[in-house]
Image (cartoon, rainbow, N blue to C red; front, side, top):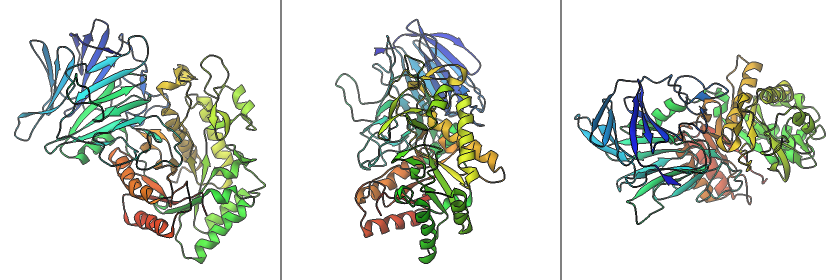
Length: 556
């Protein structure tokens, strides 16, 4: 990639400044709040993606996305611009940024005594890079010894991220190592930097796969640095301060949207296992679960149906009831309701190539399309190949909501479990409808699960407008808290998982995902020991930061 170096002031507008960089690019510096600035680079004056689905400071984002030049929801305070030699400074009462020549930014904050103090700065040598003949952008900042890094959402290992490198590329990471596996299921390129005097947040609003190096990499030709690099898209980041880490997290939630307030029953214990719905007599097994809860006086508020209820010869087919296993879905649902339990059902956004409705959906153009032909894209999915639904097509949304309504809600299912929605479509140029303006999937992979869960949410709201909706989703991006509860995915049945899932949940909470939980006992691996299983339940019942507790394992 090529370093961007020389800049000149192009124009000063009401809420931002535009610089011309190397005679062809535009760097925009926005003043959004007293302590919140935004930096946006337009390569050749253009954006790779002119919409965002993560930024929602006042109200939810339109289905088609929020225009990147939309400043609604911000207070847009007064600010001052000064020039001195080869530098340009923009300042509010709380935050200041100085642009140096060649291009690098220096940030300062005003302390309680009214004095300007150093906050952060770009690496003076080669801070902004862009691929001159294709995709790819990067941003480097200097790294101080007294900084500690947190955030990044759902990540394995220690809560503090200092000295490590992470990747954002949503994967179906079944049986992951909670100490070391990376990447996992979610895309949240947000970091909190903590110092003794100040904390600040940095959020990159870019939905392409990316890497964040927080001190793992060193280079003799540069001072200590941290790096964000994306395979495509734009450099578009928000920097904001807070006295404490909590203040930074609150600011990030104000930026990306508040948490969905679910029903009271969603805070209780939720049972689940693949064993019941995979059994040939699934309905009997599920009814027996109710009996066992009553027999052993186990309080349980809900049960989550794994996807076995949709199976044909062991494979999963969304919106397809296997009536041999579950001959009377409505009767089964009523049995759970009579016992005071709600039901959530697993649904997946990819149709296998032999799905009974695949031809119908393909003919209507509801799948993401191949990069070179108008045929549906084909990707590996559940021991076969399938095609992913394109939720940037309103007709796909309508088809999905019809399926949620007729195949689940009208059958007595109370909520949706949006699963296997990492969208592992590796043809980056595969084409999405884009609400009438075509977008390559490489720019919006994490948006697809976001729109999937929103489609499910709206279907549930229309079906039962008097009830608070409850949904769960495994994958997503910043902003998913507006629609769903989430969990730490298909963890392993061991003590390391128990220990590090606690850290993982805290990392998600620091990153705006407050409504989180874990599969107690683990999902993948050997049968957990009694001590490990009991410890999992103790952890779940004692830590109030975990509103969602699900007993879930593939092992009996």
